[in-house]
Image (cartoon, rainbow over the protein chains, first blue to last red):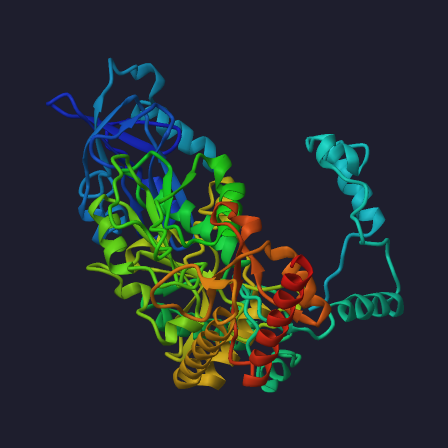
Length: 131
Length: 456
């Protein structure tokens, strides 16, 4: 059973979003995703200032057995990246919803929350995947 | 480990399972105009006896000429032990060792190879090899695009001395992926990059070949620093033999080259009518995750014993499919085995002797040829074991006349770079004796004199 904070939004690609007070959006991968990947050894981060498109590749998380894309869940531009992951990628394993955040985006427009998953909806998705 | 192909029944069952009526239907996405029925000179299936006879006949056509052609592939002495060892049953496979528990010897050989190549190039990491030097340039250019993500222009600048064939292969492989290859202007006196370089655009990488295709020595420090100042990566294209004498790419300029590639054939691989050869590739530690191909790593097992295994595979094709770093999913295992044995037999001093002797022989040959009326050096300045010579007449007929005397007199540069005029590229490696060099000079003297008499 993986941990699922109630104040976040989720995607079917096993990413989470936090709407910050300053209007930006922080993004990471879920506890379920980090557990499935295993020990992370490398994170490839985008450049600050880079524009990203909903559904496009934004970062890569690499474990000893797999490398997975992190997709942009919204349109926007990169305002910050978690530089600490360069030396310490396993922060994602240890604290996926906190120190293991990956990218902060400035949304390109209004965020369509109906295209994202609530904690309950994401939990249903996980249950369905396990079934 | 036996290799068992599908039986006809297997094929039928698999086609049935995916709903394709036959094999042609399975591959029908390949446009018909790209499919050829037969290859010139490649017959239908032959028996072992027939194929042996055919290949002997074809090999015999090469004869045993006195070879003064370099231009990217070089005739060096290959000690008998190299291929005696490389063709032992334990080594004699081109196959990549996925199964570490059954392949420690092969993996260790590749690891030793990687260690030797990083020492020669002065960079941190080597892969287990690529197909050849030319495709190595394409891979290095694509790797530079992946690594230098701030630059989105896809522009790669080539020094004037980069092998024109490498540029063609680079364009063929990487051109369709949005990369463009442009040339830096040439200083016509030295053959190297012009003294004043001017480029305002965004550059992904600058490619510097040392020694140049013309055998000249480029000012690699200046060009490397110039590239880095513009935010471009530096790709060195180097001849491995020359690295026993010249500065390693890792030491070029303030920060060193970022990637070095080259043709590995000079390291114990016979010319063999053009292949198989192998490409080598090394890079700095910070680019390692963008490096294509196989990398063997050394580790310790559960009993704390040293062991070897393929590493950094998470970005490769068998795991990442279409998102793999590159579609290079193998290496030239047998060629690399031979090169590793060659390097370990010669050692650094032996390789240096080969390099020095080749350079001296080429200097001697150049002196002899330029004493002939109508032949002069094209470029001033220091050379490695190759030199471009300007002839006062077309090159092709001269080469044809030399071939009649069983001498391969060099590479006709006017065919690939016509703007240089009638230029012949010659090379004399350590395999050439003083008598060989004198024979070449005498033959060309005779050809020139006979032609001059005819036209008089």
